[in-house]
Amino acid sequence: MMTDMILENTISNLKKNNFSVYVAETKEEGAQIVCSLIDEGATIGVGGSVTIKELDILDELDAKGHLIFDHNKPGISPQQLLDFRRRQLLCDVFLTSTNALTETGELVNIDGFGNRVAALSFGPKRVIVAAGINKLVPDVEAGIERVKNIAAPMNAKRLFEVGRLKKAPPCVKTGHCIDCRGPERICTITNVTNRRPFLTDIHIVIIKEELGY
Image 1: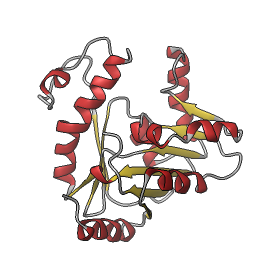
Image 2: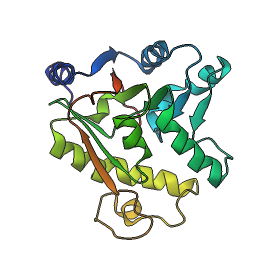
Image 3: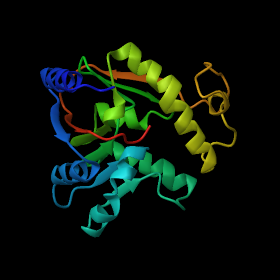
Image 4: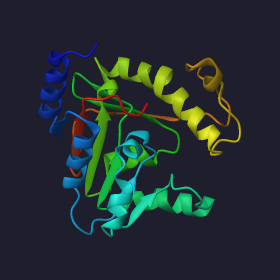
């Protein structure tokens, strides 16, 4: 069970690692904080994030006139999907979550295509990371374990069900990583953001609810 001390340590260490940190009691408050960090007219990229979807802010941002590159948008063609992933790297604001947020102040992510961790590292003028309390872990090792045994299997199942994967990876059935070698493997890049990169303005919004995988 998450304790106040763990949350306080996480916030303190993230700040020591030069991240800007905010805490929201609810996902509604989290959504308000995220939107407040987006300048008028900013172009927005959206990573493959269930958390961002659950914040339910994209329609509102679209109504405000923001140009949004969301490769999860239903009905886009394979070429549009690829184009959106590339445009996310040069947008004004990139919205994403993280697979794990460590008490020692790091972000841990495992990607398939790499566009999410690339944008998290360099390119967009601002990156906003929204993370539910369920993403907090003690350290990097625990973060990687969380991805392999929770986030990756659930994301693989989601991607298979919406037709993004032609075949379900073994973790969809096992519920945990078996280090598969098949073409449908979604874990190809492991990225640890130890500190805020020099040229990337990263804002982390921790929400005291369970969100995403």
